[in-house]
Length: 183
Image (tube, rainbow, N blue to C red):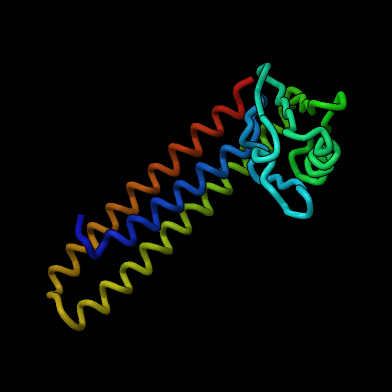
């Protein structure tokens, strides 16, 4: 790959990586510990990621179990989960917190599928914005140091790069939508 296109390739890669991380936080009926990734627990006055204050496990396909390192954190973890947008009420037995994931309704599956498609579209827009920035940067280069043919060649490579990432985004959206719609 041309060194002049490397930064744009990296920006597009980061967009796709971010999208895939976002998709992991969307629950699809099965318990996935990544739905807890954005939850912060008040740990002695410091917002701390949930995974750093306890052991998160998936003992059953539709249950997440959180065993805090300290018993005093049970209430704080419960409060953080209730304040989050995962939509599940935690149950606790004094030492362990359990999140039971209900079966998704058809309506909720369709909502989640729409959300996945929207996130995919947002990622495509971000990739296209990187392409636009790249084309602008190439045009500026052209005024100074390289020929028009080289610019055209670089623009074509940038377009191929964009197409490749758009295809990757479409694949990720299709896979996640299929996962959500599978009962």
